[in-house]
Image (tube, rainbow, N blue to C red; front, side):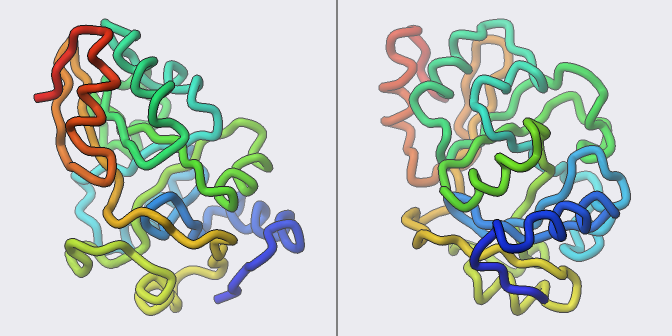
Length: 216
């Protein structure tokens, strides 16, 4: 495994590696994550294999520009997503909404919904700036079920994935969050808190107050 501390020294090699159907490990605002090109079925298969992740558990789709969410998902009340994106993106919030089309069905196992995110970590954003606006498929870099109530750190990710993944991109900044990302679902006009991270229900309610929406 190559530990990369400066993306710019080998970005072409990393991108070529991904284009050949291979995942890498990158930092986010919370966990170190396995990531691959979202349209690469081969790389997606490898992520499920490396994590020993059940195929009925979809991967998430992350992108650089928060305003890109409507390329991938739809919501009857777009102001809800816009308020959440304006307030918390880029940052540790994943939003589950109805998918816009079938473009990413392989990573979604044909589910009708898609989990979206945009990260503030400077290293992550530097990496994503080289993808020409393309999104990535992403999930935490650990074997499923082995890490509970803690973040997937550099040490955990390397220990569990060192024999599977060739490139580990190290964060230039310390990870400042204490929990995995907050997850909400926004279906119709209903916002449900699926998992509470550092962005708590109160913060979500405050952001959506102007829309007269309360998080369930």
